[in-house]
Image (tube, rainbow, N blue to C red; front, side, top):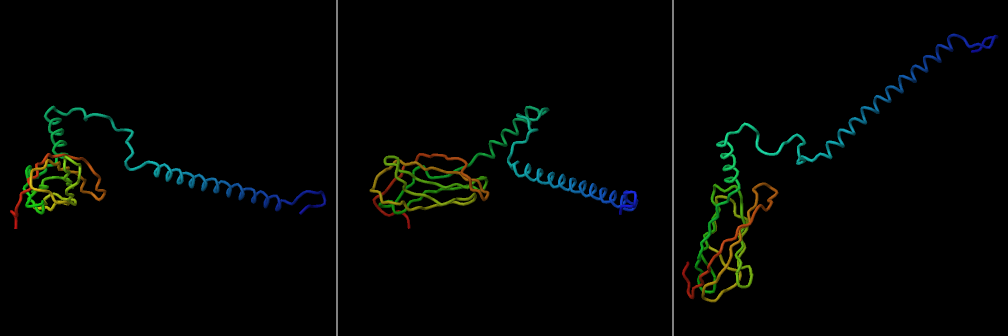
Length: 191
């Protein structure tokens, strides 16, 4: 209220000052909340951008200093063994008449860390004569039937072993080729 002299009462001034303080406090709280929200959003964005497979900025190349030559040799040998796959297949499998059935002896030993799949390709034409499914460590295939009949005789072929990781991604790791000679007989040898 304004008195006769045109001045406001002390109560009004006090009330106006209180509103101004409240407004300033509310603005500070709002700025604080905006800052916290901005920080959270920034943290989320930078976390999402950094893939779990992103290179660590602190990682240094090479081997950790202080290792003896023997320790380094052991580490390298362990890495080589980890990546090795022992494969088994008959180098000269024998097939009965028309390639109906043959003893191939494909083996993935239990000590292997990887599964593999095998294709047998006829060298002369590049034709696929056989394709296995995925063979896990500790499993083997003794006998197979070729996808097409062959006349009696010897045929040069290649077995292609495609190695896959055992995790759910089943990523192809490597490929190994083995030369074979398929012997197709003119009679039935297996029952």
